[in-house]
Every structure is written in structure tokens, then in C-alpha cells.
Length: 383
Image (cartoon, rainbow, N blue to C red; front, top):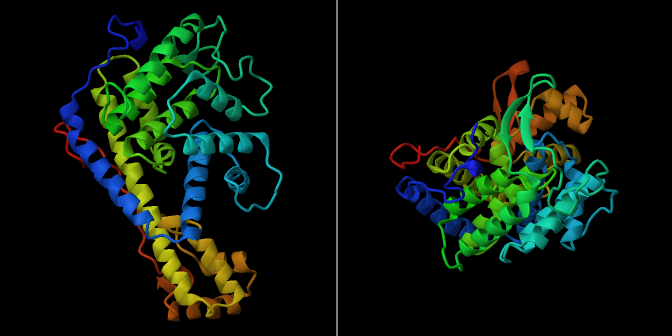
């Protein structure tokens, strides 16, 4: 097997820019609309959006790698990093590390990329790790850096990265390319194209002993933010997590060839889908504020607790709908009290009911906004 970095034209990537033109235009248009919508949020909702967006990316970029973190701890650490009020809970090193890295990404999006920035992010990301030889520096092991799956006696090699001895030179070239391709660089590239190339390019070098996937996705987020001139808060990792199998398949195809058209078309679809997911969340926050304002002073403590719990599920809603049993679990209410409370919430148009009797389910009275899969077809159309 010959990998992309072993080919004579590495890293002189090629791609069909015409296939990406519509997606690039849509992304920039969506970014402008997003910025305009955020302006309508109050300070509290804007703060909530920032915390939720950063924490969701922190959690999902970790989950892509199989690491499940505690949301409350991550959010607490993010709030602390941003100088906001927090509950002062004890946060484990993994949650603290990814929170620090994501806040650093958010704050320094406009700064040029550098080895020092990547080393600092890697130290944050590997906070508390004792199993790594190289922390805060590029890998030095003589053994091949491989991405494998399957059993130990019959592993499947999905990719093998350049030898460690080549990493400093490869990364110097990557960092130079990244900064040169920025909007204010000498050779600027469109937003989705640059973010997609940056991710595959970085993953192909695989410069660190561990954490390359999370760092690579952070670099893509940085590229998108630089292209629109502000932190995008785009749900990139959250969308990749939903499409995780296709993500790994697209990367595996991409690391065998330096014609990146298939990879960039796949990534552009993910970028548009992620943007739509973020837009849906902002619109949901606006609707949530209007709903809570309308209901202020009308709900008892149980009802308020249940409504806030349902709203935590975001724009795609409470999975399967709220049942009377769910309501009793959330609030501690008796069956009779739950029935009365739910009927009252329907009367107040806080919830609406689907089904009857034991099949009855309740949805929050906000228009749900599920986000469909977005793909780029052979002609560059979004489907």
C-alpha cells in the first residue's frame, strides 16, 4: 500500500474547485445569517449559546475517539476559563483539559497557527495522562504510527503515518501552508476547502503520539472561524459524531490519494450540515426564551422542572416524547398529580399531546428542527 505522503506529488493536493463552489457560497451566506440571528439574543442567551456550543464540541470530539466525558464538569470548567460564574465543582483532568483547549481555540481563532500553539493544546488535551512518552511535543517513537482495528493477531491497518524523524519537517511545511492559506495570507483558500484540506493534511502527518483526531478537528474549526472573521461555534464535531462511520471511511479513502475532491465534497456537506445544526440551536434558544417568558409565574415547581428538563434536549426534542412515567421520574409526582400537571401544561400550550391514554406522549410547544444529512452531488449541488 502506498499512502498519500509517499506519493511524488505530496503534499501538492489537487481538487475540483467547481464541485465546491455552491457549498462555499452557501457556507458564507449561512455565516452572515447566523451572525445576524445571534445579535437578537439577550446577553444571558448569548452566554448560554457560547457555553453550550463549546461544551458540545468538547464532548463530541472526545466521544468520536470513544471517550465519554461528564457534560456538567466540562461546562463548569469552560465557565471558569471564561471568567463566568460557576458551581466550583471538582473537575477531572480529562474534562478540564479538553475545556481549556476548546476555550483557547475560541479565544485565539484569529492568531496564526504555530508549533507552540499545537504543543500547548496537546498538553491541555493530555492533562493527567501518565501513559504517554511525548506530551506537548511531536512524537519521537521509532515504531510506525499506525491507525489499526481488529484483533492483535490479525490487525487491519487503515493508515500508516510518516516516520517520526520526518514529522518536524512535515509540520513546518503544514504550519506554513495553513497560515499562507488564511484569508489574510499570500494564497487564501475558501472556507470549507481550507478547513477540509487542513484536517486531512494534519491527520496524514499524525504528528502526536495521541490526540491527533481532536487536534485535527480543532484546526478545522480554527480555519472556519478565520474565514468568517469570528468564532463560528459550528457544531462540526457533533455532526461528525453522527456520521462517524462515514467520517472514518472518507478519511481512509482520502489518505491514499492526493486528489482530494471526494474528501472535500464529503467534508463540505458536513460543514453545511453542522452550520444548519448551529442555526437550529440559535432559533431554538430564541423560541425557548419566548416560551419561558410567556409561562413565567404560571407553572408550579414540578412543571417548571419538567419543562426545563425537556428544553435541555435542544432543537431535536425529547427523544420519544415525554410520557407520564418520565414526568413522574423527573418530578417525583404521583400518577394522579402527573396526569393533572400534564393536562394543565397542555391547556397552557406549554406542551402538546400525541396519542391517547398509556400511549400518550408530550412534546414541547416549540417547533422542532431536526437537521437532515447534507451531501454534495457530482455537479456540486447540495442535496
